Length: 433
Image (cartoon, rainbow, N blue to C red):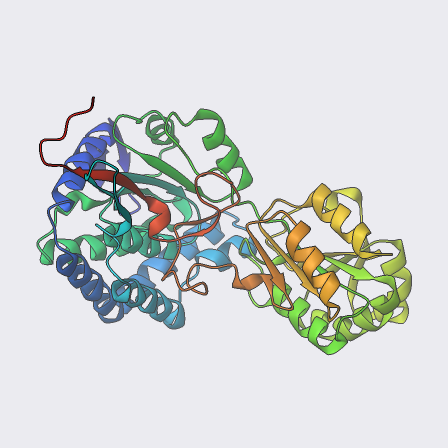
């Protein structure tokens, strides 16, 4: 049990083990709740996010002020910053999740056995989900909503930088859950960021069925090493785009710029541009204006450096080091390498990629097919931005994480990726001989 001071100076005692036991009980109670109750709670949450937007923004402003006073990097501040549009996006995601078909009890397959027994495989909730996350308050809403739709209880432990915002959001979730007649402890938020509790959470395999870390590579690696329960320990995004000799240059410039600059602080933002030597000069010169205007710093290999030539006077350009390849920047930084062939691009991605999001811009169908077939990643894109690797964009409503694991889930994890199944067998006095 840990006693801490909240930002409001009110003492809070947190018994994380008791929270785990309460979540287990709540998960059992959720099994008796109806799809209508779950959807009612979600629609109430979507509505209250709009009504309480001023309260949410006030908490967020207080978090941002405190974080900046502590010297927070601006790219982290951008990830945690909320505004009216971002709150509206959260509410829209919750509504979209409510509109999805009920997954609980979905029959995945059904057949009659040789002896006349009926055998079905049925989708069921996983139980209790634990989430340790940093920076982005929308995670509080996205994961809570997906877990409720799936019939799971959830324990949320956010980062210290957004404690006020996450606490305000979690309280709105709980209010919506209770109003719908569902168990109060279906969604629990850890009202402290004391690191001691993280170690305890990692050992709670008796009450947490799946642990999901969302944040830095250090957090993900720590969970991978120490968690006693199954955990989703992928998700680090080192994302590439390869512009082929056959590419439509205008299309390439638009896709690359969007992948890098549309929102640079997220895991599916572009980190490295690989460009075929035959179009490198045209592509790089075409990109220099938009990248410069957006404040993007280019880390160029020797050939890209030479091709940029006079553009280096207006574009922020540095010579790339080995460390600039294979790095998830989460910042307005783009490493660039000129390659001689598709094979060289594929080899670079094999060496430096993290299996997250990889894109090819090409018109040659053989190039497209080879890239899409040979690149090993959770999502591969042909003539489209890596920014589309997202649960909402894939029609999942939202995501609990983007997994780069191959078991049990890969890519954006929506409702079905946080559920299990059971076999239901119906006989008539059958015995095995």
